Image (cartoon, rainbow, N blue to C red; front, side, top):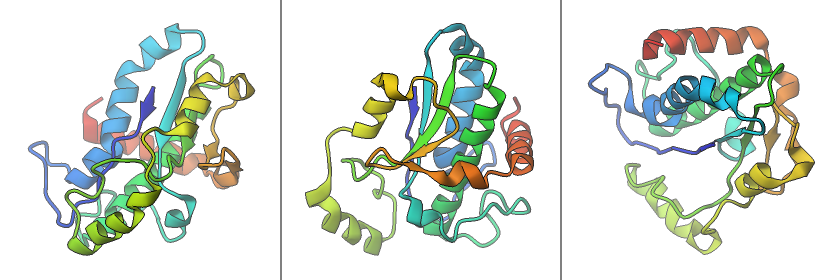
Length: 192
């Protein structure tokens, strides 16, 4: 299973459930889908969970602000998206930790530049940037396919892969307490 839903919105908007939509699409959708399918995933022998994130340099200034996890108080579309993707990394590493005694793996990856509607709801200047990236777009995400099919990473879990398949060592900086706190908060938000 590859969770790659993502978008950038130019303005803050709350869903009917009272969750900011950037956080909903970029993080909560992944959390909700995975946690609701977890028992089914555990029944399978070689299931791999993959979470598409952004390029690693976007995480340089990202942070998890537990007082404003959804970036509602001071909304900026790009910052809200970066922070939600950063939360996705913590979710992936926490999920991998929780699945250590199973045959299920959980890894994060940078999908690279792929044809998508990621910037459809974003500000005009980001759409312009998207036009500049058009020549580099791919039809498929090679790293997700590789993670799903390669025996080389069959038992690898809790790692971040970039588009060149090299492991980016974010897992070494993972703070389990933050992962647990994020998981608990998101259970409360989702009602799980």
